[in-house]
Length: 298
Ligand SMILES: *[C@@H]1O[C@H](CO)[C@@H](O)[C@H](O)[C@H]1NC(C)=O
Ligand SMILES: *[C@@H]1O[C@H](CO)[C@@H](O)[C@H](O)[C@H]1NC(C)=O
Ligand SMILES: *[C@@H]1O[C@H](CO)[C@@H](O)[C@H](O)[C@H]1NC(C)=O
Ligand SMILES: *[C@@H]1O[C@H](CO)[C@@H](O)[C@H](O)[C@H]1NC(C)=O
Image (cartoon, rainbow, N blue to C red; front, side, top):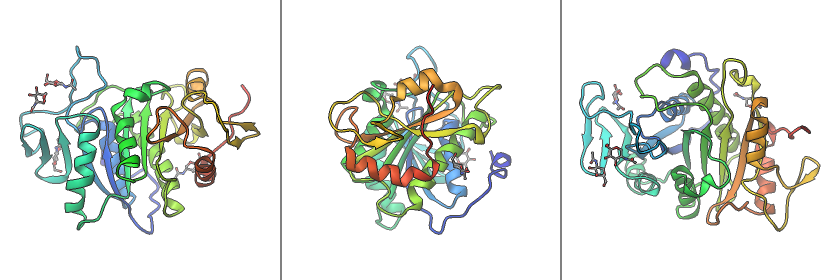
């Protein structure tokens, strides 16, 4: 992965942030590892605590990029439930989905690594395939970030990308992994740059990246960030881009994916598919303002 990383313009942060990463495609998947490398290059202090297997692939397909036999894997420590890479203790996994790996990272592994300090940010993914609208209800990564934001009071963001297939951490890095990782890093840096609190309390962000193809959406400068919502809601709406409420994530992704929009949907961490409320949405608009565009009329 290193040659790719040299291409990134490194803008060092004044201070790295303690980040726990997770995903739903397994700890050894290329997307999460590429994102980890990018975050580390930016000076963040990153710990991976993810499921061992992918929870996104159909049961008939191989569900892991892991391997049970070193030396390809390096020196792994594995018991029934918990494992980690003995030569890089920051790479850990659990044979469990949803909240267990992230809870273990937040409560046990992180504090040991960081001198009893808690993680400051939780990032999930990028996972393979969109997570749109009601998909969020069952998506393990969304469960994980909602848990972090609600139960552990740690700001959290989940990422999903339309393009990809399970790829092993030690295979050549796919170009979509590199693009998604850098877009995710851009959103992360924008959230962190304004200082704490990074996000309003009990709020998470769910991000979808559009398809990366040979023809389009394959250079960083092609992508544009828009605020969206996961479903049509009743109640109060925030005024933004000369309209009330954000456009629907599903509409933007399904109908306008070719225009390279990245959708960012703020969510309420202990409600199902609900926005976080007008006050929180205003704070998010302020925080993400530097990178947002208004969705142009179709
Ligand atoms: C993945 O495959 C392994 C081995 O076949 C199996 O033990 C495990 O339960 C599967 N996990 C998921 C999430 O499908
Ligand atoms: C474990 O860490 C070593 C050293 O960084 C690395 O060479 C190996 O690929 C890693 N394996 C996994 C599965 O992370
Ligand atoms: C992972 O968990 C599943 C279900 O609990 C179990 O069947 C399987 O043997 C476990 N795999 C490993 C490698 O521990
Ligand atoms: C982040 O995204 C914004 C908006 O697309 C762009 O102007 C900026 O150059 C990006 N920053 C980095 C470091 O990629």
